[in-house]
Image (tube, rainbow, N blue to C red; front, side, top):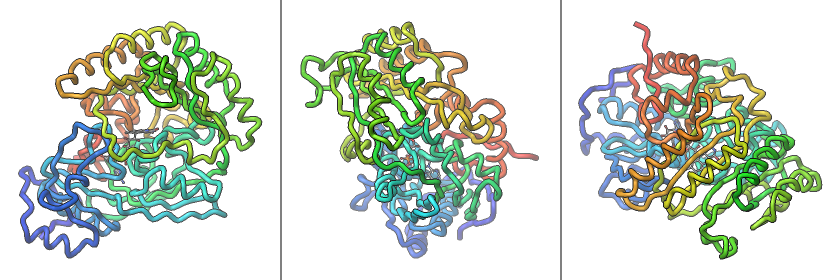
Length: 473
Ligand SMILES: Cc1cc2nc3c(=O)[nH]c(=O)nc-3n(C[C@H](O)[C@H](O)[C@H](O)COP(=O)(O)OP(=O)(O)OC[C@H]3O[C@@H](n4cnc5c(N)ncnc54)[C@H](O)[C@@H]3O)c2cc1C
């Protein structure tokens, strides 16, 4: 028998899943149940990032909120770790578990577009690319990130920083309401009026507060964009000027600069392979091609472009095609900073030169605009006034390389740190509670912990960037 009482305690000792329990669950869910001996199990437990060889006792591909409640109840009753998976791109590997249950939302992909009303209800098994392609058929978009295969579940709950961030804000700034199955198995509709505290918490607080089944988003008119890749030589002058131009540009333009070693890709001239480059992705989403070209001209003028693939295109084309078998192993650090002048640029290039990782990158996202106009307390993602988000990453090929890459990325992050540093929860790896705390200023953390205490007092949903519940006695 399952214990569906609200807030029933999580037993301290996990009880394994026996045949009759699995049988009982399979009669209550229409979706697939996968166990270690089943065909497709290995594929189903694979995450985007390599290096996470976790073997769940059970993977359940749920179809609706009731099925989610059954899985939650089972995990609670058995004291099993519960992993929630939408698109499987967790940097920390949180969407799989060793010996626990994976609640896999990937078959929940309904999308209802209200083209007239400019809103959409989207189930959380959709990827950013699937949603974006469907909305683009009507000349509409909601901003997600820079990669189509990322799940809308994880990116939205983390905040969502992408190619429309300066024009339309974070993904959560377009979230109108959501449906959440809480840790006690109840389905709640949350918005600014109904459970406003929970609605606040899920806009940046990650997967701590329940399993999101559907999101209602605002849609914007985003038809043809001017955008794509621009590769420039990496010098301190070019990098500092690139950031300055991107900050001064109209909000219709959002920019991501990847400072990295030129990969041996066919579109990169051979003589540049192995050299440091600024591989920038630009999106002008203002509607008018001529203004877009004019807005991008100053970037092209920073230096003779090595590659210039910027052109008018439908918005979804900005997402490169998914590489299904690409599972990189990497260490990374996320932070917010305010300035990249020539000195900081020089330091970035020196650190990149000092590593021999085959792939190493300092990714710089220029913020501001609509994101910064929302007050810091309005959502759980509070780093609203930070001007730049930086992610440092080094790929490694064998476990023996990992320690050296960790040291490099740690030293690099320490050198770049400005002010309180901060962290974007969506890019945090498994870095410990102190780093999770850095994602949230103290008042935000305190409020999140109190809300967690009300909606998940036993911390059933703990396989995430965890905010331990504070429970009133
Ligand atoms: C290649 C790559 C590119 C990225 N680019 C961007 C970017 O441009 N902008 C940006 O903001 N972020 C970006 N990210 C970070 C990304 O937003 C987070 O990793 C996000 O958590 C991934 O979501 P997912 O659903 O794919 O992941 P999953 O691994 O499925 O989920 C990650 C975690 O989110 C929680 N979660 C997911 N879905 C739900 C749900 N429905 N209900 C409750 N909890 C849930 C769970 O705690 C889960 O462990 C990128 C990540 C990668 C790997």
